[in-house]
Every structure is written in C-alpha cells, then in structure tokens.
Image (cartoon, rainbow, N blue to C red; front, side, top):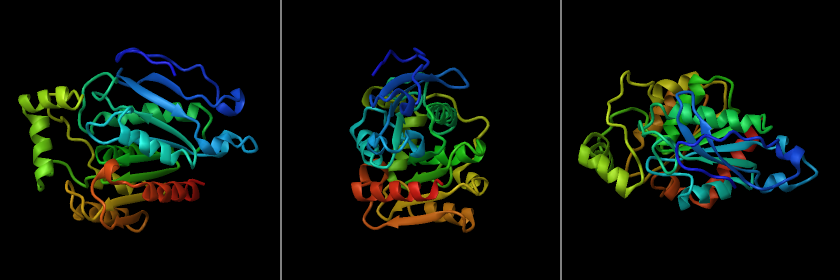
Length: 279
C-alpha cells in the first residue's frame, strides 16, 4: 500500500486487477469535488482471486462508515473482510475522520466523499458498485444514490436515521452535544480522532427519508436492529414507507447499532443480497 499525510492527494495509476494480474491492495488519497483529500483503500476480494472469472464480473462494495469511524478501525476492517467474500471492497475515511482532510459535516458534504470513492471504484474496472453505509454512512449512501442517479447498482443502508436533528435517545443527545458545543468538538477531536466542523448546515441537506423515493429503480435494502440505542424502529419504518414498496426492510432481532452490532452472518446475507440484486 502507499500512503501519505492527510491533505496529500495521490492519483492512482493502477489498471484494473483483471489486467495487471496482481492481488495487492491499493491505498491512496482521492480528491473530492470541493478539494478534500479522502483516505481510501481498494482490496480485490477473495472472489476476484478466481482466475477463471474476470474481476469486472464481480461487484465492488464501497463501505461508508459511521460517525467517528475510519478506514483503519477494527470494526470497519471486519466489515470489509466479510464483504470481500462476495467481491472487491473499497473502504475510506470520511472527511474529518482518521487521515482524511477537512472537517466532518456529519452527513452533509460527506456525499462528495462517497461520490469520489464510487467514481474511483468504477475507474478500476468495476461496472457494478454497491454502496453499504452504516449509521451516518447509511444516510450518506441514501442521499448519494438519490443525487447521483445511475452511478451505483444497489444500495444497503444499515442503522440509518430517517430524519435530521433527532434527539430522542440518550446517545443522540450526547452526539448532538459533541457536534454543537466547543467542548464537545474537543472531545471528538482528541477522544475519537474526528474533527467536526463548527458551522451549522446552510442549507439543510436533503434528508434520508426525502432521498429514498428518488433512488428507484436502483435496488435498496434497509437494515435495522430492534435494539438500536440510537434510532428506534420508527426510523427504518419511515424509510421503508418512503420507498413505497421498492426497497426491502430487514429488522434484525437482538441487533444494536451499526458496524459494531452487524455480525458476520448478517454481513454474509447482505453480501448475498447485493450480488443477487446488483445485476
């Protein structure tokens, strides 16, 4: 892998793995449309190692982590490892997280990060891109699919909110304190390696529930745990209702919130679903 400090932008010169014959991962910093450098990692995945099938026949999963995650966090690496059984995988750190540049806008301009990563995945030879987002990342994959029509083959949103400014649970009240208060942003920076933008949204971005109707006909899967401590079940139900029969809803018994709660069995089912629906 190649790497560099946050703010350094390196353009990949690597050809699709079906052409090069190499199975080594690739790490680089990708520039977003607004000039942020996003730390990104491409791994061809176990399925691509089958020399009888070109890598472009397999989907590439782009994993969008939750707030305070990053590409090197163990729970993000575990998700990537599980999905690698089904295709290639791209992981990345949203702006303000890990080694990426900029500051987190908690789901607003992060859609530009995902757009840059999806474009990179397609440039590596994958015609079928599946976005898989968790919590904040779950809201971002919904908005990205709505705003960038035709760029992804399927969308999976796990533990996502349906609406903005939700404060109905203790974890979400703590998160709002972290985002809105100067002392909270210090905790985010030094306790969670997350640099948070101090400005409020202006304008307020398209909400997840507003984005969902715009995703059709792209296949959509909404996954949520019935023990999610951040967003209760009215959130996924609102998203499913907004999909108007287009999306699928899986309510997982005993599951908590986001990547930490998504066990290997669930990730395997998500991979199977994506391969079947992505065409």
